[in-house]
Length: 104
Image 1 (cartoon, rainbow, N blue to C red):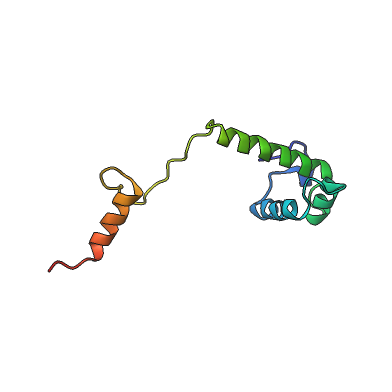
Image 2: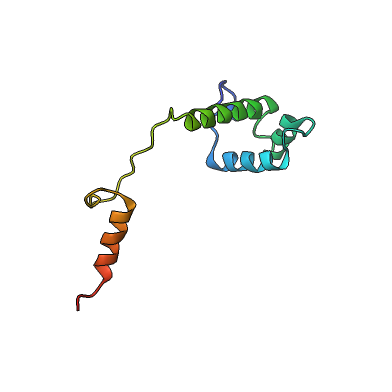
């Protein structure tokens, strides 16, 4: 998620900034006076109050889309070996267990 604009503080948010933002949301809930200013200060001055408010609105939009089923599940790779028949986690776990079992 990136904010618009050309200033250095409006570039895409880093993973660290997103984590700071999540922590700030936990500290400053919706009933906190001057919430966006407090969160911006929590961010160490790297984002403005307007930027954190827009970032929150984008987050709410994204979560709404996910909960409505409008975001497809990602297809994760399985390294060099394809998953076994069925492709589910149970099949993968069974294959993994079988690798370490000794035949008697």
